[in-house]
Length: 287
Image (cartoon, rainbow, N blue to C red):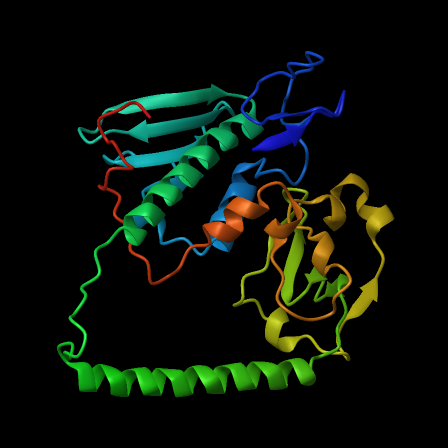
């Protein structure tokens, strides 16, 4: 994936440690906001937003020093250094990176996770599907046809309800909001909140009360761009230019950056299986 050098504006590979054109170092500060997760907390949010299986299934532990075999992970040690590791099948640990550059450390695990998702997707797409000669019935054909019909009816009802919901949308536009003492930003149908502890924006999970409780009587809409400055939502990697003018409808934060093609193509399907022992995870190698 390409990122832009803040010094000469050249587009370069994000794995470079310095710009090959001007020689500027690509530290966490210089990496373009929006290109990829820059902190451990942002990587956690990215993982959640991808709807990936639980960490015990994927074996990617973000912000945790897990000691059991077969595990990838990242965490900060007592000295404040970021440690990116892989625990092999025999329990021995290989350190991929240890140092103070959090953005670089996060990118190491981020790229490994992306590669793993691609491998898992290829596995799911390559599974053989049983075919039957024309004119013959599949085992359990009648039952499957009945179930298919019911599923179609349910899907039709869901789509109809979604259309009705759009017609009677809450009318709450995109923008900054103050709700129960917390600053939020609405983008499409999704909400994001500002975490003062980390000075960064985070995705508000669908279980958050703001999705069900907020209405035209209990929020205040305001412009806080100047207040947040460089930490404004528009400068966060969640921001989507394409959805900024829409007051309703589904949006995806990743549509606005260089990661968009990969994310839309490899959006994780909860019906897909994840096999951490499949070929994509060589648990005997260092990485």
